[in-house]
Image (cartoon, rainbow, N blue to C red; front, side, top):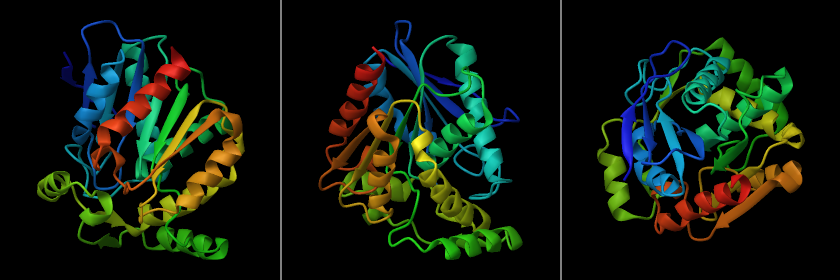
Amino acid sequence: MVKQEAQLTGRFGQLHGWLWCGDKPPVGAVVMVHGLGDHGGRYRKLAESIVARGWCVYAFDLPGHGRSPGGRGRVDSFRGLLGDIEAACQTIADRFHGLPQVLLGYSMGGNLVLNYLLRCLEDGRSPSIKPDGVVLCAPMLLPPAPPPRPHIFAAWMTGYLMPWIQIERPVDVDSLTGDVDQAEMIANDPWVHSRITLYLATQLLSQGRWALDHARSIDVPALIMFGEDDRLIDRAACEHLAIRAGELATLIRWPHRRHDLFHDTDRETVFEGVSDWLQQCFD
């Protein structure tokens, strides 16, 4: 049986989250960071699969997403987002003291999780805040056909000069999933949106490039996975990330899958892939 509990977190204690646990004391905790325009409540099925292996799962809504406060797609700063992830890790560390903690990031969340881990290493954070492992699902590090470095720098500068500009396009459901029922659920979900500020868009691009450049510093187990039919990210960046992370990295390429692996066809197999990796690394 999976128990669901609301749990607030974030730098200011205002971010909405769901905690899923089983009946027995957990062996570890997974902190889930969702993608752009997404929200944590969509990941209950993934949580149930992980909880069945004895773990707890905590998924929270970033600022400007889901039930958390803030303008849709707006953030105060990239560093602030990493601070919210740190607060979520601390929330769960306080609740489950001494247990392994793994950060799982999907799409934009994968970019944030990787940057959070690397900033922990750079800043020398305490072990209670640094994750014991990371799962990067279709991490949005670079777009397809990524621009050259000078263009990335120009975009980063433009985002700082005009941070208020907001971009909105219809949700590209066909690129997310080939599952008709899941596509309909995404299209009709009132908490899903497709808004992003120029600041956040350019930060994700520049910080994704920075994370790739520093990936050799990764010193915890990392599961990196993407769908071979994913049209929304630079899949080669995921492969380069795994190469640079070295022996600590496990790379899974899912054939015939699109961007949203957790809501695509045969998603239960992806759930099992994550759960198996957790068991192999931490049991």
